[in-house]
Length: 178
Image (cartoon, rainbow, N blue to C red; front, side):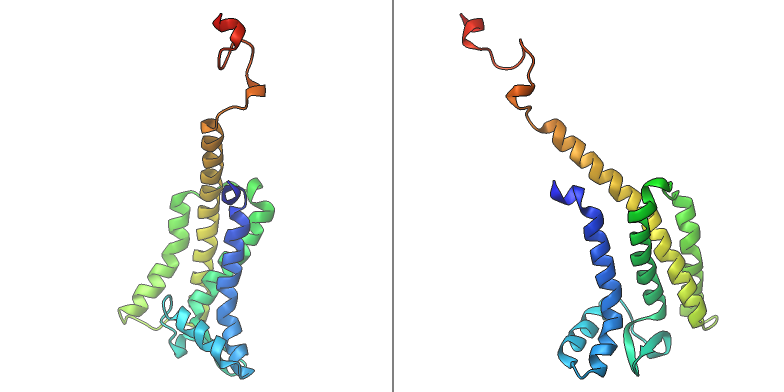
């Protein structure tokens, strides 16, 4: 049950790490620490196209993921931290609003993919940031509710300790058997 109580810490640690490593990669490379930099680069090829024309550069080296992914995962990490601080006071995001936050990224990405136009770094950053914010604002309340329900279900399925039983409940004692 530790996981259901500390899911937010784990989610935020993951998001901060995931958003930070691609930015650390060019700094490692600039410092001639190529082994870890190569590992980070190779790992992020699984989640990003890494096209140089759509990526930020830091210290003269390309960041390990594109501008949209940089904005998306940075927004998720920052939103996760904000949700840890204020989330219980903010209502969860309705799925339709989440779709509205995702729509600009879908339109920008698909119109570029289909060759109708070339997106700008500003649009990629804005649309990725909106989507990242929407993911946390929609997903974290669901994760919190799920973790709470798992804790309740676990508590309900656990046998009650004997000291919680009322007289007349539980296993019969020797006096009631006789």
